[in-house]
Amino acid sequence: MEFAGNQTGAEEFGNAGSSICPGGTGCVAATTTAISFKDTGAVTFGVALPTANTTGRSNAGGGFFTGGTAAVYSNMSAGNAAFGNSTTYPTGQQIVAGVAPVACHFTNLTCINTFHAATCTTAPTVNVFDGGTNTGTAKICDATLDGTRGTVVTQAQTQPIAAGDVYGIYVSTQGSTCLTDQFTVTADISCP
Image (cartoon, rainbow, N blue to C red; front, side, top):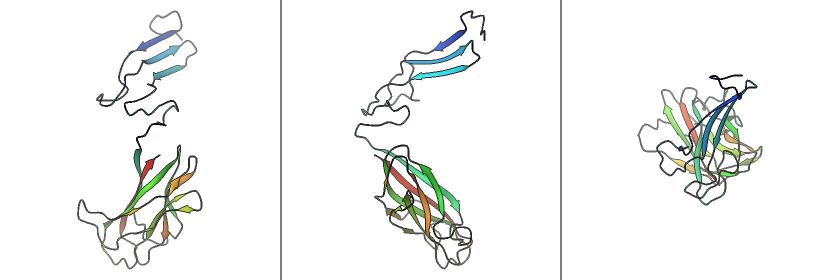
């Protein structure tokens, strides 16, 4: 494929030394950023990533920082739903899951009652999991509205997540007469 009169079959647009981090705080300059149009009709996007950032963590793995001493924190959310409805969310039902690219561990589990309009006799209990049998410490959701901003009760977690495992959050004990309450469930994760 010819691009802009280039007879060699490739055109590159480079920006050597550009930053790969917006804002530049704690970033290291990339060596090359390029887009190539080749005569094969393929479009190639290339970014040469630095081998280390300012925390000493390497990017040799191609996307996930490994090594170094600083932990990476993240969270996963099951969103907001009527997790107390035992018909839709029975005991054992996973409500969010993923596959771990690296070894991590859960640090906290939170369940917030965001909508309460009717009786919720027994709110659901949720828990984290790693694989089919490894679980954390269960958290009973509140049967009444958690309406005060800045106030939340969490359940500390230590459950490890092995690289390559399916991990997530599930309903460990279904709710009872709790059909309309809405709950937001999140788990905090630290890697490594």
